[in-house]
Length: 70
Length: 401
Image (cartoon, rainbow over all chains, first blue to last red; front, side, top):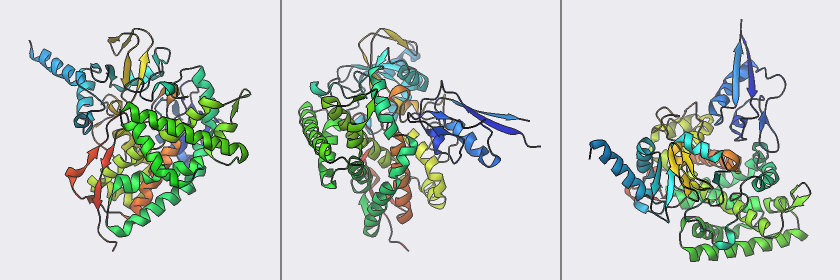
């Protein structure tokens, strides 16, 4: 059975670099000031797992957390 | 004197004599940066009125996140680089809370989503520039391509006719590359007059451009007027030019000299955005300073109050504590938390637009000129000053098959 992958952005860490916005996923949105947030409950569709994972590896602020539960 | 002492002394000598304006050093500044980062990560130079150099990722990032101690009042060496009239160049030379006002005002025009609307104009500029070069079989990459992209795009972004391009280039050179105060003053004066004219014109004829956006933006009922408006417009004009063309020139020089990387991007253009980040990491063009407001310890080294500290994002980007194989370009590097656009409140406002220009400029060039190489490796020259990149890159390519 596949586990659920959830992503969160820590608003205290996000500085609005916008790196996460460059990946092909709908899991990140940015406001007028460039700060990122995650819509809904953060459950990542399977097709976007890799892109979300890459986004987390490229955030200069370590603001993105990807959790896998089984 | 022990062997350790003599190593330490030679590193300190390297720091003491380091200047951003020394052409010999700037041909290969990472030779110095690597040595400083590993042996003397917060070092002092006696050149250009004296300044400190922070080279470790952790120290550079920490300083940018403490604007109360590391003020942006002076961001360049020497302090009065832009002359006494332009000590304040909002928002880049302001600290919170004044800085926060400008950032709130400007940021909505520069988000990732906003930047994407410029893609068609950038695409057109890059495609036409590359197509014009392709038949010739050779070019000087910096002047013939890399500069052309941000210069033409800046005209478009600001809604000014492209015949001002040569003037932009000259202003840019005089203010950023040169340390000659006379030239700086002349250029800032001319730029201010030109932008004041553009502002006046838009009062009657508003348009969908950056200058109009600046004039109309409002925070808490306040708008930009007078000198702060002109200074902000000037910053936006200059800040997107040589920064972008230096990053692009370094990227193109890398592709000219690393055929295996170039072929990978030609075969799989979807790798280009990842490659752009790695090339930004490795060839980060911008280093700026902060001024200490009090005595402070950075990376274990005490720095007195009132000193300039060069925050070396270029060196931080090759810190082996953060990047495995930091001294190698790994064109598909998956984890890349580079800080080429800076960190903290002053991180680059135009980063999303710059990324777009870099990606599209590489895509469009490789689409018509997939194979090119240096005409003469010895003819490559490098810039000096706060914005680093190659000045002259002569390349040749065969005729299309």
